[in-house]
Length: 174
Image (tube, rainbow, N blue to C red; front, top):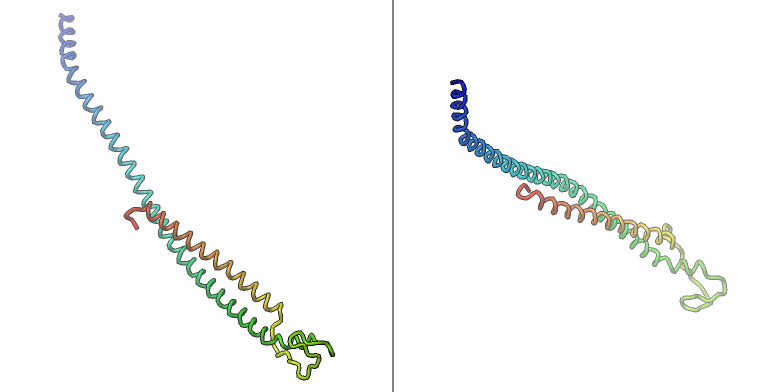
C-alpha cells in the first residue's frame, strides 16, 4: 500500500503539472513583456535625458552668444573708431602734402607740381600734421580691427548654428 500511496501521490502531482507549466509559461510571457516595456522605458528615459541635456546646452550657448554679440559690438565700434581716425589722418596728410613737397624742394630746382623754379611762398607744415608712417600705422590698426571684427562675427555665427542644432535635439523643451 505504500507503493500505491506513492503512485497516487505521483498521479496527483502529474495531474497538477500541466497547470503549473501553463502558470510558468504565463509568468514567463509576463516577464518578457515587462522586460520589453522596461527596454522601451529605458530608451524613452535616455531620449528624455538627451533632450534635457540639449536644452541645458541651448541655455549655455545662448548665454555665450549674448557675450559674443557684446564682444562683436565692441569690435564693430572699435573698427569704426580706428577707421574714422585713419580717414582723418589721411585728410590731414593730404592737406599737409603741399608743405611736404615744399620741404623737399631744393633752391633752384623745379617744382614737381607746377614746374616753376621760383618758390616765393612755400607751404609750411602745421603742428601735429601726420606723416606717411602715421597714416600707415593707422591703416594697420584698421586692418587689425577688421580681423578681430570678422573673428567675432564668426564666433556669433558658430554659436547660432550650435544653438539651432541643440534646439533640434532638445525638441519641445526650447
